Image (tube, rainbow, N blue to C red; front, side, top):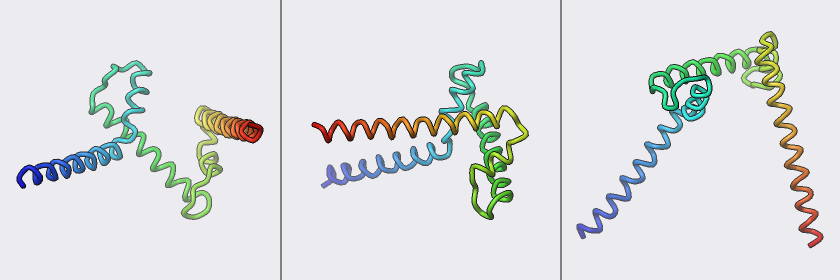
Length: 126
């Protein structure tokens, strides 16, 4: 019986570890991306945790403020792309980057759709 209790006890601790890992990943969702960005801008490959904490806090604060402003600009309690465009219209770098990313996203959607159409037609023939 003791062996079974240990076996079940170890299963629960693994689940607890998974839950804590998931909450850590949610808490620091941008950390991996920020690490590579900071490295790309000339920092060490493994930057200090405090550096990542500060950069993450700045980014999250900016996103939060932008979303709050976007909710006030357009329809109440809704955020749309037009609201974001309106808020960043005077910053040419951000505006052009958003425009580029949106156009690339549309191109990717079209390419995926074409690929799926071709793939579907191939399977119909075969």
